[in-house]
Each structure stands twice: as structure tokens, then as C-alpha cells.
Image (tube, rainbow, N blue to C red; front, top):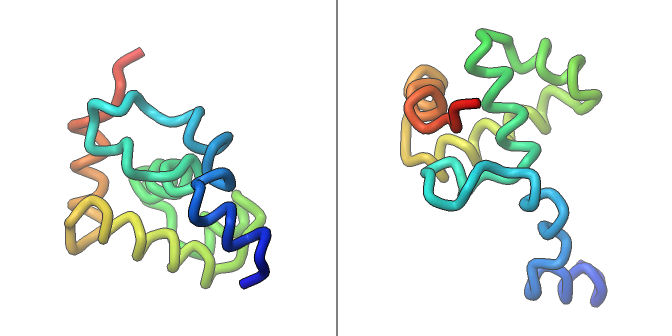
Length: 93
């Protein structure tokens, strides 16, 4: 990791703009990045990793990494449980 990237990682500067678009911090979903929230929304719609990858213009493997991070952050074991967390904590519009 280069010095600039390491500094951004320590200060959280890289996550600033992405986090500004998230749900309010009073929900369990606040721990997710904007991209993870996008992926979780696609998971909740019943899409496969391959379908999500095509939709978001990222690789299947990257989707899998996002899903793994989502499951860990939400402390759940399955995509179904993660979907339930999303539905219970979604900000109503």
C-alpha cells in the first residue's frame, strides 16, 4: 500500500464521499459503504453475483467480496438474513 493510500485509510478520507450518501447513522445499515448498500439492495432483489456484477460493472469476485463484507458487518450468515436486516432497517420514504 502506497503512502497516500495508507494515509487515506488511516484518516478515512477515501470513504468520505461514499459514506455521505448512506442511510442515517441510527440504523444497523450505517456500517455499510454506499457500494455495499447498492450490492445489498441487489441481493435483496434476488439477483445472483453474476447479475449484480453486470449491473454494477464490476467482477463477480468483487461482488462476492462485497457480500462477504456485508454479511460480516451485519453479523448474519446468509443472503436471506442480510435481506431481512435491510428490510427491517430501511429508511421509509
